Length: 267
Ligand SMILES: [Zn+2]
Image (cartoon, rainbow, N blue to C red):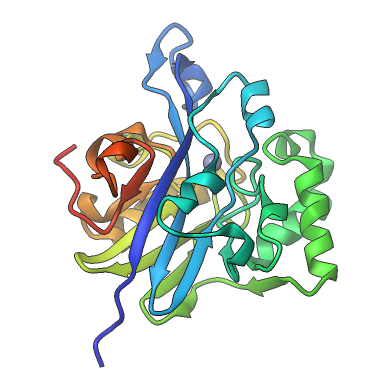
């Protein structure tokens, strides 16, 4: 039987412009601007299922960090007919604050996360203030609440989430950082989430400034590139180039709701 295909959407909800290279890459020039970061969540839709990937961030939190709010990511889900109140499945690629910010807006969902990520954010790792900076305590407390409500599901390592959707433990950026391969009409797309923030990390093997384990992160870049096969099938978690090259689901949603199942422009 042929592997099922899925629709794969990206929702761009925030932007960080005027970001210095030194705030982006290890060893980056403190006097040079980089292009910046876009903030995404994603959804995998088809085969009578809706699977949301990560839950974005809240407006006040994003703006308090001097990022630009583009749209409410939960509202953007509605643009492709997804009502968060009725979503049953959410995959959390990792628990950094820009990926788990709206857990309470999915009141029916069960959430899936890697064992190692949950261990990391509730154990000894968090005694190190450096590792804590990318997490928000209230998000972690909410995740623990979901656990005790039987709404948190654990996976470990690599495996099959559903026919046509595979998960991969990449690590590096966070201890339990996960990427997903999603079979689409144009072939399997590798959604790196924050295993890769920017294409530049892979192209230049240049380490991003936030990491759990530098070697795992750098090896992870290679793993992601290998899993994607070619660049047109590799989707980093924060690259504004993604927003540039993928078509919107509708013209009025340009730059906000992207169809990753369609061919990107050469970027
Ligand atoms: Zn992120």
